[in-house]
Length: 193
Length: 295
Image (cartoon, rainbow over all chains, first blue to last red; front, top):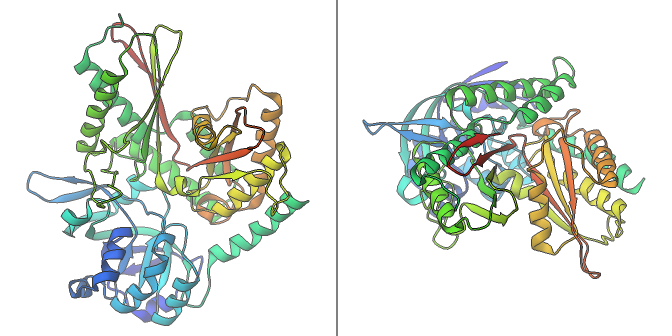
């Protein structure tokens, strides 16, 4: 088990390889479909300090607002990452993001981007919402809640011992490609005999 | 005249939503436990199943959603003659909005034109409610929460499919299902449960596929040919090696459930409703007078 403390250096990230299990602590930000579209249309500067050497979590949480106005996460598992494929490589390079956390893996463009700008793809467990919400120890802030709605807003969160597995690394490795190649072979035999 | 107190029924429906979102049914938990035992000690797959089981317990104990994507809320309701569907629909909507307030449900409905979240999961076709009249003297509410990740890998084929060599028979049906599950990989939050609709038109075929998902994992298809095909598909799909989350492993599907409709001579649709491992469904029986039981 490798412990990653955010902010994290490009060097530390480049040491990671597919199959490594990690636990993450520190500040990261959620961003999913509408947020990525917004970034690509605006490239806002206010995201620089939030994203640099940090991580993007593909997550649309269930949240609860307390009487004093503060928020907490009630359910917060990963959402499917591949929908951000058109955006992610350039977002990571622009803001020096060191990892995206999501589920299902991403495509060739992101894999090439990870090698170029120094990043990894971290797979969280889909549907692990109650447990993962427990590792979000604080909601520091929320951006664009009104415009994007609860699931799609930028939630700036502090996590402690958030578990994930490296499934795409900065050396061109992708667990998703390996598993797909194996299952393609079996499927071919089952279908064509 | 079927009698119930509206305010009480609204609270009973809210409890149904809470159960569906936070309490995974016993047959599903048992299937996940069995899958865990079927993976080698120390494997990523076994560790994933362990985490899933912990999460299931935590969600039930703390009454919080198992998955943050609380899904499309799909109701299948059977009513005796004379019960007002309008009234039941209004009460379900009220319970839904309250479930969002209580964080049992995520505000999960977006206006497709403006991009705005409705904030309360009401309107624009949400929640999805399907009524059927029956000859029994009680009302049955079946509720399933189906998330977007697994809905996105659900699909429909049209036979024959030349590329797959799939003809217009059960062997063709088998082939397109293998193709669909292989294409889905881990994206639908594997291991999945498949609801299959054979025949019908495009709409009824999809609905038949989804309706199959209301069956218990442990039941056996009344049609012997389909029962055999369900068992064969489950075995063969688990040879694909996709495993939980697509990390690799011995369990890619937990169950396959199939139903068939008559079709036009010109059409042969096969619809595949892929349900994630967080197979959230519960039901509630409402008797005349207002007494309820949950399953």
